[in-house]
Structure formats: C-alpha cells, structure tokens
Length: 329
Ligand code: SF4
Image 1 (cartoon, rainbow, N blue to C red):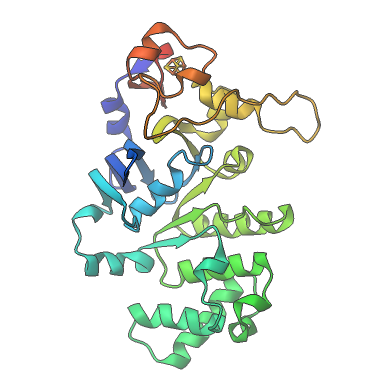
Image 2: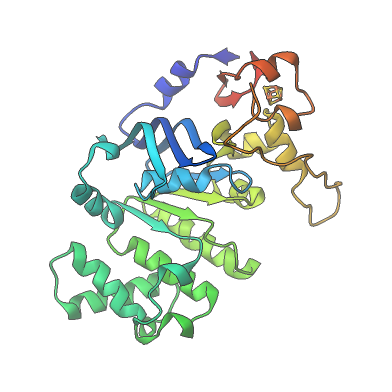
C-alpha cells in the first residue's frame, strides 16, 4: 500500500517524539564548489527508540550527527532546516543555550576517544569537570559520581586515577560513554563507537548502549556496519550521498530491502557461515561537489531508468517504509 509521506509523518507525530529533523541541509564551502553533505534530510526519533544510521564513508551520517549537536565547523554550515529536540528548535538557540543542551540533554560518543580525551588529565578529573560545568556540586561529590558512572559502564571506579594512555581502546570508549551520560541526557548519539575495537569489546559497548535505552534514553547509532545496526536497532536509516534513501523497521528492512542501494549494502555484508556469496557494489560514492544528475545513485544502480538520470526521485511512503526511488512511484 502506498501512502503519502505526510500521512506517515502524521502517524509518527506525538509527544513520544524526542527529536524531529525537518528538511535539514548542511553544506561545506570550498574553492571547488559547494559540497552538500546533508541534503534536505527529515527524520524522527521516539523516546526510548534505538535508531541505526547506516551508509558508506562520506554519505553524510556523521555530518548529520554533528549538525544535531551544532558542532559543524567552518567551512561547513547548516544552511536550512529545523532540528526540534523536545519541542525546541536547536538551530534557534543562542550558543550559550546550546552549550547547556550539549551534555545535559544530548550526549555524544565520538569515534576516536584518544582525540576526545585530554591525554594529560586523569579520567576522573575530566568527568568531574564535565559534571561541575553543569551542576553546582562539590569536587568530592562529583568524584563519587564519576566513580559510579565508570562502574555503570563496567569499569572499576578506581580508574578515575588513570590517564587515558593507561587504558585499552575498549576501556577508553567506555570512559567516553561515561562522559556522555554523566549529566543523564535523554538522547545519546554514538558515532562509530566500536570501529577500532575487537568483536568482544564491541558487543560489550553495544550492551551498554542497549542498557541506556532500557533506562529510557533514545539512541542514535552512526555506523557503516549494517549487521551491527540490524541486530541492535529498532529502526534503520540508510543514507547515500547526503540523502536518506530508505528508512524503516530494522527486521523488515533487512528481510525486504526496497531501495537498490540498501539491497547492494546487504549483499556486501559477509556471512559468517559462508552460505551466500558476497557481492561488492559496483562503483564509488559520488563526488558531492559535482554529484550525478537526477538520482545520485543512478551510475551504480542495476535498475536505473531514463527518468533516474533526469529527475531527483521523491521520498515515497510504502506501508511503514520510506524509500527515495523512482521504482515505487
Ligand atoms: Fe536506481 Fe532509479 Fe531508484 Fe535511483 S531512482 S535507486 S537509479 S531505480
């Protein structure tokens, strides 16, 4: 059954939406031209929902996360759109107001903890500093809180006395999560939190994120790992060249992908039992300063038609799925 996007949006409207992004565009300006990293993106996130945003490198998923946090640096700029978080438009907040939202209401776990943690400061001092920036409490109380936070992510409390280089990659990532939840945010954004970690540590980090969700938080997981997102998320958002090309319930999307790009991504996921042949997707992601006309995926798409080369496909609602492809018009 094909339905209008407005109708689907209507169904998902309501008080349980923590985040509503509408028509968001973030561009980077260079001498070569304008790179549209996030191109008119709209999506919602419900309370206690776990959403995985998946796509190849350069598809715009991290730029989307940094846009939500308003951490885009020049030559990048959010050029249009709305980011409604619990009803307030983050793009209209003053810098000071946004600083309060960051950490206190929205926490972020970055890809590389070594570049986010201060190598010269003990872990405990870094967490205490974050807590005291937002809460009027003494150092001892904040330190006690820091130890409890470390324990909540599976680290002994005495790690407050360690420096980042004394911890393993997985332990540092846990510290990053402790820092991100120090002020009890309702939304946690994790940008490739397990990229450099082995599968066992990866599983533990994902378990911590799942627990965060059980405690009532909403989670956005940014990843290039489709199987990880499929296994852990309630809903998957597929991005390609700055667009959302497909979005829907994780298990249904994996069983019945609709967008040719989603199909290609799924075919390229390795199968541990070697029961299926891995197919690599032809071609490369486009140059976003000079993207292909019409559908940006058309040079790589096995189903491309004439219209695909000429016109941008609309985002179409099919049952509970959204898909940006002429095949469904
Ligand atoms: Fe392929 Fe056309 Fe659909 Fe783009 S719009 S994904 S080129 S079929």
